[in-house]
Image 1 (tube, one colour):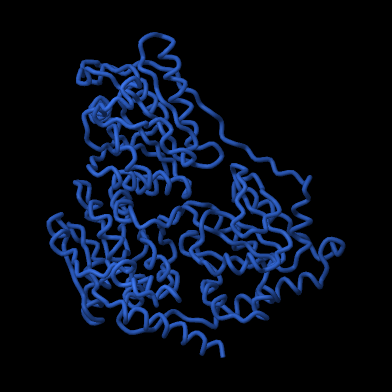
Image 2: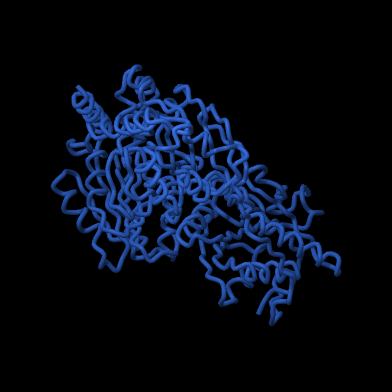
Length: 567
């Protein structure tokens, strides 16, 4: 049985027709017509998450795991505002999150009625489309309602994937659930975007005209279809390819590029600078690569943007190429020519390209993984080096994702992090949502502040036994102690690193986790094995206790080792 609200019936029918069937529900009375209608239809997979902020990030994890849009549904008032951090992350990570917010009728907004705020358009530019459905009273209202819902759903992918917002005012009575069937309704569909790359801009000739070519791959989903073509561009065209774990590129080259840039002098940076830069994907973790490219004197910078949106992260963009990554990179890779075409590419240019590629390879090869004493850095390396195959790795912000880049991870590891906005909130909830929708062993590496900030992420009944969490608990925001200048602030311990003595033990055990802890390297080695045990019938949380002071010393020690290796 469904609600008798016609706008609700239209929405439920259209979500099913568009194959959006993963729904995260937060409790409330105003959205009860929606909750009842979704929960009583077996075609929908529903998750109950009380905390709306956690619910939004849980939905992002579901999207990451399934590769499909997911919806999150909340009641009226500030519940909607609590979804804003997840909406922002979905916007910048390009995830198709559908926000459905129940609302009071328009005439009651601003009239001191309970749980009323101006919800229409509340997410502003963070969503690609925001619609407010009418209260359906006649056939014209129904046509309008249908069109708005279809339009919103289609905007989940309009060249790039984006969040959208459907605000649905519902009048009383709310609790009539006496409709047996969903209506037969109009479904509007849109064909996929087809990109025809022509030679009018002579990209092939321009590509071959540069000897120092670089591709930087930012954050990409695991099924990105570009690993093979990037490998071909590297091996055949001697293109330097830089990427971090979040790019999900298999067989990554030049893995230590951030250390190379950290230790290079001005002359070396000049030699390492590309003439042509091609960028794909989203955010990169390294701040140094951004600073390096912004000052590298790049002659041309092409950014592949399916939506055509202008992204100028490196402040030197010359071409926005409206294509998907795979299509354009294959087009460029297809520009292989024999060396008789001297007018296009000379022997000298071939030689310079190979020399440039080998320069990067040799510099990266001279640096090693950290070999340090017990600390966050040590614990991170031990975890990543112990990961089994086919694991999904979730990295929290910010210390966790930075430290992880210094270590290799097994090929085939699916890697995720909320780097769209780099916020502290939601890392736990995202990992929990991912593990709930995935069969893979899911490992979350997080710091203490990120975990405790999102403690409600494990307060739900969808905790999967395939979830593993490792917390580096150093008693505060350890990353701030490593930032030159900030680490000298007198306000650092009380107001910036937020020193604390909190432990996750009781909370984790209360939520059904098997709890482990480690205070030294011997204990940690033993507990890592238990943490990653695949046969566990309960989720497992390992809390690793370190100190901010030792962490800072070990990070400094590692980079000093690399300086010495360079010499």
